[in-house]
Amino acid sequence: MMILASFIDLVSSAGLAGVIMLGLGTVFAIVLLIAHEKLKVEVDPKIVQIHEALPNLDCGACGFAGCGGYAKGVLENPELIGRCAPGGPEVANKIAEILNLQVSSEGPPQRPIVHCRAHTGDKTYYAEYHGIASCTAANALANVQACKFGCLGFGDCVRACKFDALHIVDGLATVDYSKCTGCTACSKACPRNLIEMVPFGHENMMTVACSSRESGKVTRSMCQVGCIGCGLCAKQSDAFAVENNLARMNYAQYAPCGENEAALNKCPTGVIVYRGKTAPAPREPKAKKPAATKA
Amino acid sequence: MDTVYILITGFISVVLINNLVLTKFLGICPYLGVSGRIDMAFGMGLAVTFVMTLSGTLTWMIDHFLLMPLGLEVARYVCFILVIASAVQLVEMYLRKFFPPLYDSFGIFLPLITTNCAILGLCLFLNLWGVNSLIEAVVLSFGGGIGFTMAICIMAGIRENLQMVDVPECLQGAPITLITAGILSLAFMGFAGMI
Image (tube, rainbow over all chains, first blue to last red; front, side, top):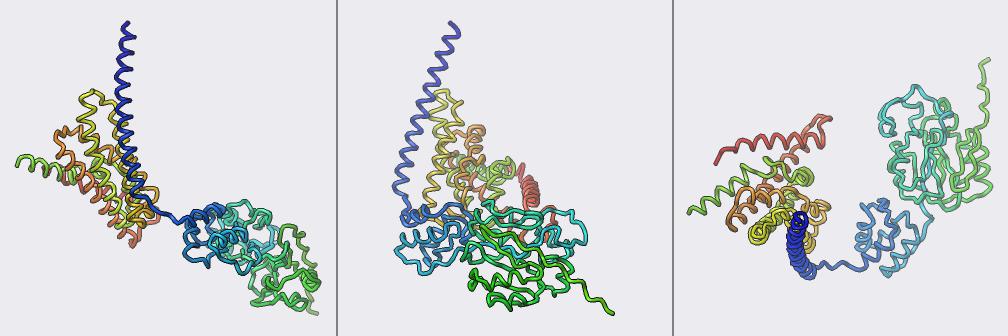
């Protein structure tokens, strides 16, 4: 009987508490409802539409903090259409449709190219690095590896990539072009500025995978597969030009033709390679001629 | 005259001597989180003051006219949180409508006023201090808000100056902020026993 009585007591007082909570809750709900109606903020429906059209990855490739910021920005300044790298031309067209605009030029998508092709075995090291495993930290140290321009292989770009499209393969940052969205995060992350955003007009692009501006002799002494600035490629094809001991491809001029193919085959160090979804493996460097000995 | 004297001493007490942040260590989250710039800190202080005054008054009324006569003191926490959450919602809507830049700069810290323990702490202290009149409750909750604003503004001022100081590398960021907060608390201990 005692237990029953205390139980009834508990239920009756708890019921009162419940009623009070319910009453308070209702009062506040009504107050907030009125406030919500009175203090409504009109948001441009176009912003909502644009935001829905965006991929919502918040990658920051457009220069805004997230997709919400870009949606606002692009409405105020329609010149920013096409900044959404993961969305590409599709999203640009959708935004243009919402804003009643025509997108004039649809360039090829931008994709990153790593301007280095030296794997661990190709590089020369003066010492072993046992510091913080980050390229930015390693780059602050002189002579981490012989080549001051090449890929350090600690994967700052890999950590920057939100799409799992970059991996360190045997000491070299390698782009998986089937996953890449062209968000430019990797090119910003690389402390040696090795990763360049390139208009990818074809499935595979030819490129000079080296950034060494050292003279040919010095480059050769440090790396098996560096560009020595010999200019053989520029003689074969107009798409190549040598500047500061370094050959560079003019990507706008590139087309898969015989001249470029010849340049690739002539290259003494094999630094001209294909990059892309179905790129063939890079060529081996030609055997170094034995240096002419003084008689 | 007597009531006025009690109100003034109560106000000074809650601002300086029993400052919620510096002596009770409540509301540390926004105190360290939003004290980077003095204008933002001031805005945050005002928002907290508003919420604190509103919820302190309302909770005192609910406590005295509803919960205590019915012997439902156990339901205090739930009721108080309900009041605070509603007040924060109100402030959020108001700021979004009339001060959009401030609303944007607050970000997550504005809804987080809901869980600002300084506010719930003050609502519970009003009962603990034995506040018996409505006007006293209003003045004390307003004073609590002013005390918070003062503390966060002092902190923001110091932190703005710290930006230009060569802080040892191991103390940069959060450690120097916590040390500053500690020294500030020590300084405010000097007010103890003033009234």
